[in-house]
Amino acid sequence: MLASFYLGMMLTLALALYAGWHARALVGRAMLARAAAFAAASVVVLLPLHAGYLEVQRAWQASWTPGAMAGYSADVQSYRSAPPLMNDVYVSRSAR
Image 1 (tube, rainbow, N blue to C red):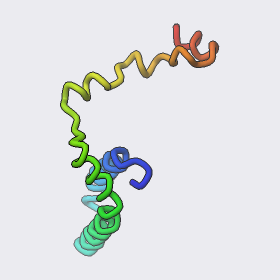
Image 2: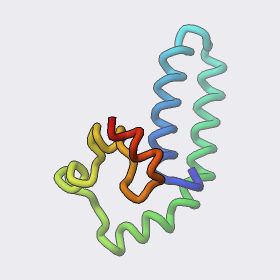
Image 3: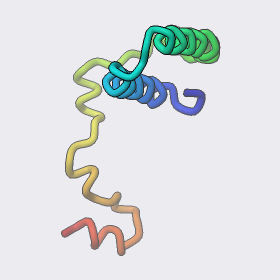
Image 4: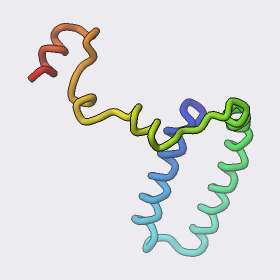
C-alpha cells in the first residue's frame, strides 16, 4: 500500500474477495470479529498515510474519465510485443 496506492487497493479488494469466498465456511463468529478488528486497524493506520495523496488529487482535480482510461490502457498486442528500443533479441522474438 505504501509503494503503490492503486495496486494496494486492487490487491486489498482481491484478497478480501478470495478470503471471503474460501473461508466463509471455516470461520466462526469469533474469527469474523477478529478479522473485522484487523481490517479497522489497518484502515486507521493506512488512511493517514494516504491523506497527502488524496489532498494532491483534489488540489490538481486529477480524475480519470472512462474515455481517458480506455485510451491509455494496453491492448492485447501491447502485452505480446517488446518496445522498439529493447534489445534486438527481444524484438525478434516478439515479432513472431
